Length: 424
Image (cartoon, rainbow, N blue to C red; front, side, top):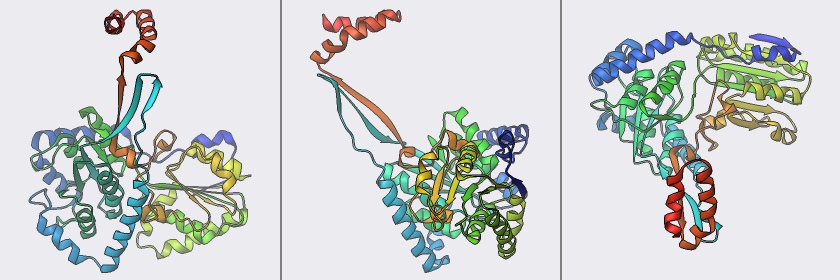
């Protein structure tokens, strides 16, 4: 870990940089993968399963038998947990539905906006070292609430060519019937282009590594929309002298264990909390099954001792974290200062894991400083908003002159005539 004590502001731009892979290397590989999928379809995906995931798969489509058998392979406790999380996620996202309101801008001119679901969506579920069945809930639940007609799920198989049973159980619980054994950039390519088995979709959702992010960005060349650039996970924790070091270290490690390319940032105003949190990390990391990944992530993570909470939030807004934890006794006054963050966790007992699984908020969030200009996934992510208007004859008379004058000033006489011909 990299430790900084009271760093000067001029050094902050360097401190907020994320670890990256050489972009030229990524871009070339992504183009090759898209070309192969466009040319060979399912055959290319089967070959990529073997190449990237060491998985032998005779077919890409998950059978109904595989889905039905999955339920028998997971515990009743896990099923109960998944159902409760689904209920909370549905409750929170259902509250985001907007009612249609018609506005009369002038007498006789009525305007309004209505939501329409994105008809075909693809959801990418990471399934390698950590099969994220929770992400199925985060994406399928709002997609269903929005009214999406077709949900396509892609996730990488294990070395035996199987999908994690918890992913299949959760998909079935959410009513998903189109599930495919393909991961990484090739899954994004398949959903963008379509293959013999996998339908082409209109918008792709889901987190992933830098290759998945690059593939999602590349997919936009084919007219496919994406939720956001959501890459390797990250968290920034701000702590005062009332923070609990063991809690802070647990939150930092919960992100570090996602993968070697994850990043964690710890900022505190208290040197005792600073040292005790680092000591707690060294103790807790030894007990983690994924401690090597966590260690690798910590190698490029940042620990900062700073002068004030105000200054810490200023740094945080520059960093724009995916997850922001305010481990503060009195956090309320600082909420208005938060400008850039994917999701915020307030107080010592609001662990980031709650948002990852069961509090109800969505865990598909912008990373790599994209929280400066992107929101996390919500019900709005799965809908388009279409505007409507109705003008009566009287309404057109009231704004007709305005339209004519503006159209003529822009030199668009046909626009002016579309009004004039009606007013005559």
